[in-house]
Length: 562
Image 1 (cartoon, rainbow, N blue to C red):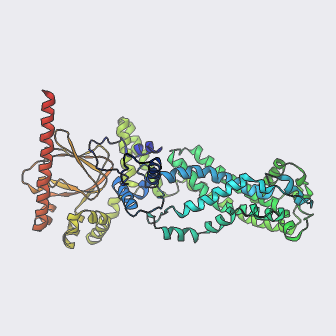
Image 2 (cartoon, rainbow, N blue to C red; image 1 turned 60 degrees about the vertical axis):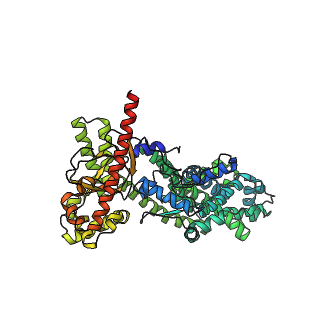
Image 3 (cartoon, rainbow, N blue to C red; image 1 turned 45 degrees about the vertical axis):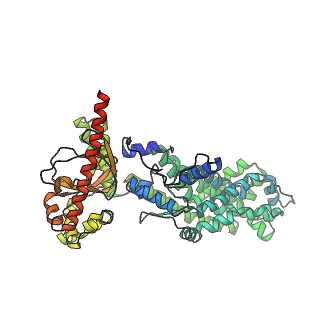
């Protein structure tokens, strides 16, 4: 089972223990033969890891239920696509390891370009105008990092991407390639990854090529995203962890500017073949000291420039360094302003709707504490608010109460458009009747293990399942089947007069249903004889199936009793 299954359990509550035997694998991949080779088993395991995972927490941000996730998985398998789903197990593990890899790359490559960590004598020789046959071709560590970068380029071409605004996942290979090639990342990744220094023996040219490592700073948002995803998967959301993440990213910004500071005289030497004698680096004799001393001095200089602090002992005379200082000052002002805004947004919970949501949650928690509700009930109540409002509180009645009936009907029809598409019964209704049905539907949310319908009770409504999964049980407790998005139930009591509920309907996961009462049902469906006949046939069939399971279960129970 994937490593983030614990997150999945906490997201949905207690895990449902299914008593039904499912036909086939929920991965929708062809079953392996008994005599399958290890390679075939490995290939199937690898393919399964690239499919969307119902245990990935991000899956539920784009897909509302397991049924939608399974449909996306099935479509992925049917199309025989080799694209990796961004919410797959493979991608989750990959992002965890790439968090560490990008952290090392973003530190090492600019530092090696500036200070030549592997062979510092070569770098010192350049500044002192001495001839030196460099050993950068022995930089196997740098080559390994470039190789990782090249593999990342290939993986990106074969990984789907998310369109956050539309809540959509793009899995088309051509669109993925176009999206990546047209982005700023592709060119910089290619230039910083290609190991040209292994094909060029001239030390000066190798040093110039290594400066491509500075392009890696563009991938700083990628590191931040991967770190955020890793913390989300491991459920590490404490404030100390968030501070650590921001400190790491901000340090890399200072690190990059420190490396730029030390590169100025080297660039001048590469371009004109002469040293910048007036450079503060030459005046401070930094090439003569060890790497740690040089690095600390440059970080100190970069931090001062970013915060617009001037240093008398490091007064700038070279025009190249003055130009870099101007750019650094401007960036520093924007950077400080940006960090300040982020801190203020964090303190204000970023948005007023979120503030209202957390205020409401605080009131709910105070209410639960005052009423001394059990922990399990408190958890379920908070799950309800989380699903209902998605961390943004709004007064739905206050918004819809001001709307006209026509506009309200259009909004309801648009909100329920997915439900109408999934429920074949509603799709056959005339437009006028459909609007009347949707307008009179009442939305309700049930948490996992909530009883929606109890066997033997009087039925005065039927239900349409918009999102989630429900289980059908006989009165004696035998599980019959599952119903998922687009299903409807509770029609038996409305079709047959004086007929009580014949089965228990229980939510397997968080479910969103729409309830239609008896009066609207009669007005809409009884006037349409063909649809009413379909309902009647479905009701009879369900009654027979439920009764069959009930009889078998009762017979088995009696035999065990004897």
